[in-house]
Image 1 (cartoon, rainbow, N blue to C red):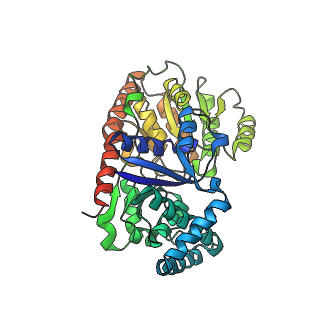
Image 2: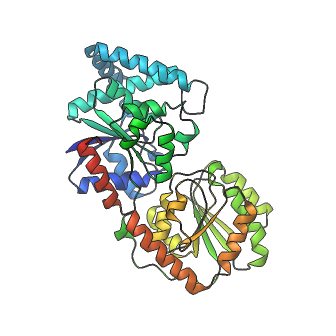
Image 3: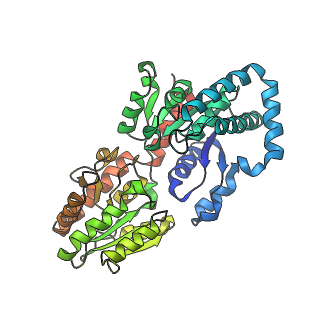
Length: 407
């Protein structure tokens, strides 16, 4: 049983869930060939990601001298399908032109067509008959075009929020219609796919959660007696809402002498956040760690009272699953798939963008008895172990791959 996975940039520090999914499928005896357009190896710090990078065929690493001859040969050998694929390429490019950043116009889609022809060629060489893409953005575009060129059938997993921010520019409806099946990572995500697909496609929209590896989470460390010690994990970018979290910390800190936040991650807002922390007088209350590997993330979770997630837009963050597996309550915004995971017995949900509600929630957490917080952590752990074991979720995918999602 053999198939290919296709991601735009892989592996990345924020894409460990894809690696876990692939490895779980391999434990089920699937042979997975990893394709990615490009590598992010210069930023990788986790040994598992570095090893995964070596297993991945990075298309652009081949260079034009190999890419173009293989692509042109494929196009010449499949003239009718190539013409149809060119029409599809131009139509997708027209929808994307001048729209949301990253969707791409016609020129970019011509480049996608070349990449797709090369991947179709490589799949024929490797005897791969199905491609699964992660994210409904350009990786799914390339997979769709490869299929249109006479290459393998394809499916893709949509995470959000990018796909839901620009569904027309990303030709999301076209991709759903052309795919063997489409996967969402939450019921909320599936509902958004339903919005952008004909009713006849709804039976081919499936929910397969991102997963954790339960065996990596031993008995949870006791919650600290002091604090509260909060941990936030994610890319330092606008949609994560971390500037709002600094504001909330500044409001809550005068009432909570032991309050501390460890912020794990890096990104374009780091300099601005550093300045905001200083301006708010929180230099001794907030620690910025940069990116950390998986073991370091688990360490920070083990030292925390709770995970806090102030995001404005998300799919269903794996970091929430990891925190719950570590026996930590969750304080998060009530967006996307989060209400499916964070329930009143496992944490608190607040309106996105409401700094007062966020600071009030920090105060409620601080005034909750230690025993109650411990029980919330136990409930969180039980819930995520039941719903998000990667082996269970990979088995769902394996069933879809075996039937191509259309029994």
